[in-house]
Length: 263
Image (cartoon, rainbow, N blue to C red; front, side):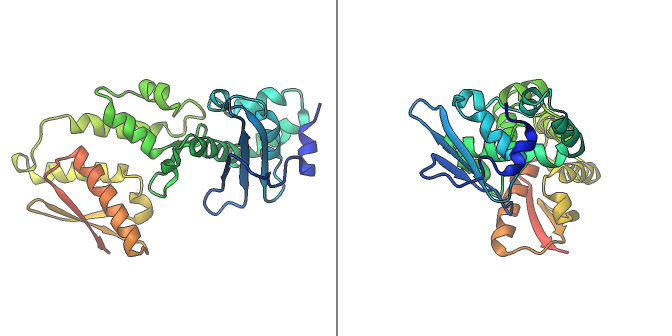
């Protein structure tokens, strides 16, 4: 049996000819190659880039598995495969958060692309649950389409928060927004101070608010101006503006209009 240490020799580290799917995420230096047969069984897997024992061990373990089984794969794969390998456990305890999630992220991205769901990997769809490769669009679509969304229902539908659960706080915030948005509301019927408090809360829940350093600047009529402090081109600004409008209007009042202004 191959030990975890053997993967430092570059097992499975090579480009694969004619793969069913190849994926490379952002500025990472690895690409994952998967080749399926006509029955959706993974017949070969490899990766390219610097030697990475986590990716190498992943490629070994997933070969021969059906697509449906691969979709269920999580971090426990390594724990079960190398349960008697002390070298693995020494490394795993030191680096699991930085390293183990990365191969799973690549794998789930590749599987989604193979299934024709590559739209999840546009820049506007941020990763929410690293354990199972669940993205922002997956979560928001569940909340939008479910009359009474819950954390347990969300986990059942997407597997979000079924791993390390570090995403749980953000998921609860989004569910709270859904609850707020189902209440009867019209911005002219309530004091502006209450609207501003709710806007401020929802703005903090917006996935890009912290990165863009967003703050409410003014509220006049039905127009809310939100300042940001981030270098962005016109295309990025338009995309974030559309996301912000959809996100805040859904939680507040669809008649309100939100605009971005450089701080």
